[in-house]
Length: 291
Length: 258
Image 1 (cartoon, chains in turn brown, red):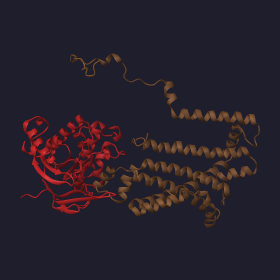
Image 2 (cartoon, one colour; image 1 turned 135 degrees about the horizontal axis):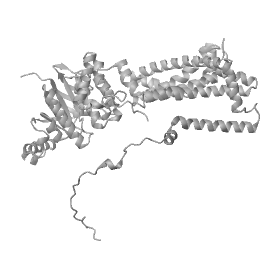
Image 3 (cartoon, helix red, strand yellow; image 1 turned 90 degrees about the vertical axis):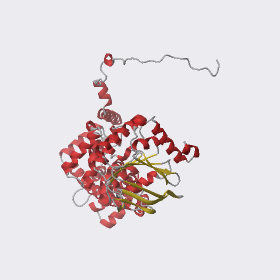
Image 4 (cartoon, helix red, strand yellow; image 1 turned 60 degrees about the horizontal axis):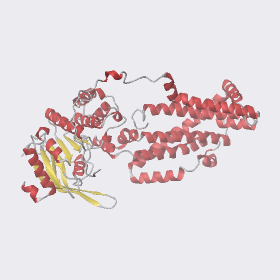
């Protein structure tokens, strides 16, 4: 073979387009089984059911309800306490405290980040504060909160604010920073400044990060609250879900402890997969900002 | 002499990078009149985009002044709508229609019902009526660019500022977009200030071309280029003008003689 071999001469070609009608359906609906297998809810339920079956089998084999009650026993206790209103009452108390703390935390985060984006100094102040306080466990502030605010809801709200504020502020600020320059300029081009600029351009543009911050903040708040209630539990009138668990432990009523833990998990799942999922579907997924 | 719509007088632009103070343009003068398709042409690094940003009000000149309707430019404003070269200038959280109507809502230049009509008309004009309720991430690059142009045009700015708007498009789409821009101009006779680094694009789009030298950008020439479009490609005058601009840009004696 010679190295300077030239490609062979070929005739040129012009043909009529082939008829595509013979292919038949270009689109085909998926079969029932294919749709089931791809369904997120079905997959999650399968995982849950498997876990429950493993739990039930292990607990029955162990046969010690003081150490590890069965799933069925836990559910029975759970149902009983729902029916007599104790669990609902406790959960409601916890959620109310949580809502107050969460909303206040978000409000502080909104103020802090708005100030921070307004100037370079503000950004540096916020990132320093975040670096200092974000790693500080909220529960470590509880003793201090008790000295300042006494036994009761204000102390709980204080630690919840601490747990929400820094996570949300950190995410929001990094979201604001990553808004593309072109988008900023097209906002300023139409004359947007100040709060309108933040509200109409920065917040929606940074929404994926803000939403991530809200999720992290929610999880921090919920676990901080339950932990704090375990420490001092009851306020003047009624205790929360943490107190419910603590009380049951004192009575060595392990099934009730489990039913309390189950409640904590169920609420966590519900908020994540109902509320946050719905927000995601209507915002970042719809806008193609997140897959 | 009639007064110009946009007047740049001895504009020197400088900006700071972490290590240097860069002079982007040095004492640039030019005037854009009503109805001009004014193209700023120059090699990369001649400060043409920076110049456009200064006209947009995003950076103040270090020296000299830029006047629009004899009024000094201070800050960005909807009288100078910008179309950027990047695709991400549309708001991903708004549909094509919402993107187009957004500046009209924010500036309150038109009544609500009129704004809605204008938005629909602008979308129809760029041929995207069936995509009006689609979010930008579902649109192709060319379509996004058309929405951006519709958004800028619907507001009826005094001048449209376009920063290499077709640079990121493929060659075929770019050609279509250039044609569309020209036919829109034929209908509406708006004023556009257009930045490009392509000699061919400058000749096709422009009625007047400002040639800038590189590092820092200084005025090299101002050329009339009306009457040449896609159909002129390959014609003698098109080739001659292209040669002449090429010579001006790269400053070689042989080219200038030709």
